[in-house]
Length: 385
Image (tube, rainbow, N blue to C red; front, side):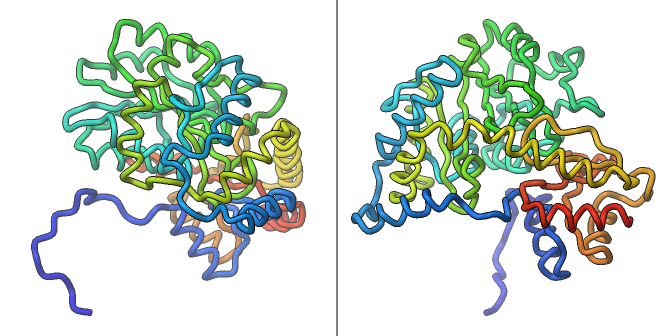
């Protein structure tokens, strides 16, 4: 096919292919152990698979309602009331999305106009800033403080202006594995009082919290919840990232505006998967032990690389572990990550692409949502480097 010869001005001129796609492709090319992209290499629950199949056979294969099937929204409402003591109305405050990223994009599209400012904590998941820019918004970056990647509350308030429309937070945090604490949300609540600013709270790893800590969902804070949209993911919760099923929670007025965009981005989400998750969600045993399940994997991984030259601060949540390699090499993160993939057959994700200025701290992100066999092979390689 011939090249397009007309005038083409990119709306995202500095955006290339996602680092996740790049590193996964490299892992495949060099037949490397893939600890880069965040997906499990163990099977989805057989019970959940059978549920999806049963609903397919029952004929649940046509469009679902635009907001999602009611039984699933009711299940989410019950889960949040049980876990956080907060009631979201299934009909007016809960919407099922085609994965969390679609929810994030549709939220930003619904509320950000040209000239609006959005504050993002960085390092940040790579979909936030491009979505803001596509709407003509301006991103302001609040740099998290290493090595614990905490919020700097001394400098954060200076980022707020009369044009600030939204603040995006993420906990448990991708890529660092840290969590936002109660004191952080209390400070945010105080800072936003009497200000017309929305909060987008990305909580897709809400069940993956370690060391006896608890998830501080923004919905627990009434002042913040009234101005917030919460994003969740069943792909992360039930090890089925390829099913792309998530949800957005928000007060009625915000939900109504969100759905105006949602209906034209995706309209409705996979019907048999929704029915299956609704049934599976009825048993809390399917998700309440996820923290201990993944903590065992984190601990196993960290234990096995103790003899390596990598330095680690144990992740508090998610299924990602950061490793500092400054004692091994002074190469750029992207260069070192690519070399590990090619020469040592182990793929990770450099953290620098999660910064708008490609800040390089000699840190790589490794996904430990893998079988014991995979982690053992990965650790053996890391200890040889």
